[in-house]
Figure 1: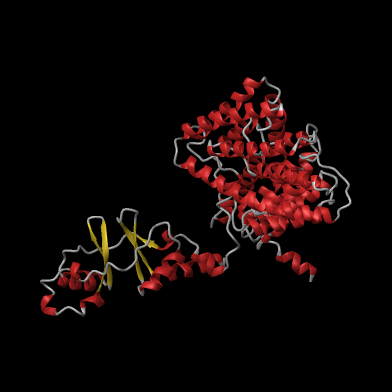
Figure 2 (figure 1 turned 180 degrees about the horizontal axis):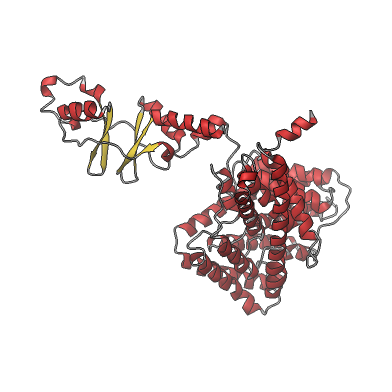
Length: 559
């Protein structure tokens, strides 16, 4: 029974070869992430944080400007997306992460994060891990089994997170959990586990890497009712906070998409510079620069609750400005930092009310709750806390993460996430409408006589229903059934415009097959015209073609 259950988690084909490939992938990703960590965080960013204040204020603008130039030139106009590319590729029918933009995005992450952008290195780490996974799969395609592309894509992402945070279980679960809001990619479990472990061991074995938790939390604490009450309060706050952060992130990306790249780059750099100056003025150090690891050290100074609230909003503004300006980086660490600050705010408030306890637990609970709410990854968030605290805060972290999920609803910082895995037919209906689109279609002009429609178009071309098009403008559908109501003597006098059905819905190229089938069903037709946003005719979708597509997919997927 146990053997059968383990094998059910493996992909079809050659699982042993896939697991060996996962080991090699983990080693490769571990080496790359170790190099990125040392160069970007320990060398460049650490140097920037010791520069004079005027240079620190200017550094983010320089980094974002260089990033924009890299993406526009070396990347040939590619987007700044990193971890989002992994989720998008995961849901593609044929997963792919093009290698062309990889250098531009990695160098963009180097400039964005190294010079003070308020995003995390986990984005480039996940991106390079997933790209490496698909590169390995492409090299070994004939030796690996079915679904190996998606398996190694996920394993590479797990390896990236595992190495960066020195938390192999967190890397494993995050890669499995992040593609969905309410589900996990269970089929990739064992390859991802192997790659995550190999990446972690490779990373910590590097002589230039210091093995430690990126957050530095370490405590022993007797947990009681106070911690559970605090966990509920933090969960509620993180739920609303995560929902608001997700909304603001989407708005920032939408603003960047419809604005000039250079306008957003300059504006974002200026805002980051101002925030760095104000941060140094208020907190005696520019805590808005970089991913935010310095926030934990600052909290050790036991600042007042008002200062923590100020920093909460300063950090949020810095991250959103970096995103809007097209900076390259991830949102895992920024969400975690917001959670650490929220937990400290709630913890200070509860302690002022007499709930005395070790204050280190509150930032950890906030981290779990805010990360769970913002990225919809509650299991990974709790596991991260478990690995950071050696299990001491697992129970209240579970409570905080669960409450934050309930309050946050369906919001997420990742628009590419799906709610859950689709079934066989649901997956087919989720295909784009263009998969069954026919563009080489005979049309009939509106001024053609009914006689011409019947003898030339319907009978001559064996078509019962035809789209009526003048120039490029779609007017409706004309059916042979509609001719029955017209006297035969009038066929030469009346035109197609007299019988065209313009009440039948038309489709758009952005529709899915599900949308098309629903529209056909409601209109009682087996033909649907497809038009662009101006009403220009593109083609048609036939119900019979959707059926044929399903039959072809059944045959190809069975091999």
